[in-house]
Amino acid sequence: MPELTVRESLREALREEMKRDPKVFMLGEEIAEYGGSYKVTQGLLEEFGRDRIRNTPLAEAGIAGAALGAALVGMRPVAEIMYIDFSFIAADQIINQIAKLRYMTGGMVKVPVVIRTQGGGGVAAGPHHSQSLEAIFAHIPGLYVVMPSNAYDAKGLLKSSIREDNPVIFIEHKKLYGEACEVPEKEYTIPLGKGEIKREGKDLSIITYSRCVNFALEAAEELAKDGIDVEVVDLRTLKPLDEDIILSSVQKTSKAMVVYEACRTGGFGAEIAALIGEKAFDYLDAPIRRVASLDSPVSFNPAQEQYILVNPEKIKTAALEMMGK
Image 1 (spheres, helix red, strand yellow):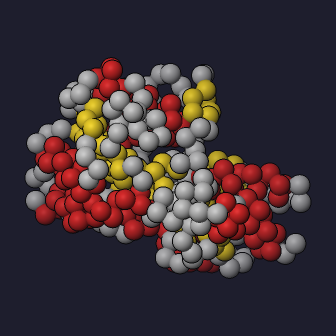
Image 2 (cartoon, helix red, strand yellow; image 1 turned 180 degrees about the horizontal axis):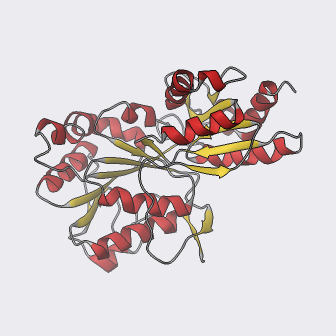
């Protein structure tokens, strides 16, 4: 199989779905000639034309509102919000309209809107371009939230998101765009709501998603040198959430660590910890451990940013403490 970067696999998913279904189109800031702020849509304008690759003004509320309107008349819009930090400008459209209209019409309308955006830190972009806000959208009934960790998953999950009749917030991590892995040329999709064990283990379960999957895998390799066998669970989607994969892993290892890049307080990892506490408490041999970023805006200073954000070393340290080493 060829290797593709996350950027390339997302582009292939968009290309394949636009070829498959003429109702799929894209809109967003600088997605046409410029190819998007992270070059995911590069070359698609030349292939599909301006009717289907639409530049918009710098107006996130307008982007989300136009996507909703298009979906209500039968189109399948893929709207790009350049940074998840800017999604708050479109919060009313996303939270009060896109998320609720299918419910409010008793299912008479479908809202197949995909909002592609990117989040996370690691590139010294400062407080307005480095946030991890997935917990806010996961909190809203009616929205699906998808967060891939590699190129293979990114392609399969994006294709499934575009085919979904409910609105999807598809969050890409800015530090993963250049990461590559094998991606099949043949058609495939990954169902929403289905996690995956990225590393089998018996001593400790690390439940995580997005870039933190890579951090957990790196930490797991280091912990193996100390005789600790770590299982890494990649959720892939936060809504719908694969509860079974979480609970079965914790039942096997009897120890649970939840890792996420967002600020510790109120992060989605707290929801996972609550789920484990409610449904797998009797299997635990140790308290559930959360490893997350500090409750701080993400600094523009690279050294301060690394101090604030979660990383493999913090995961390893916490795991050693949990295992009494």
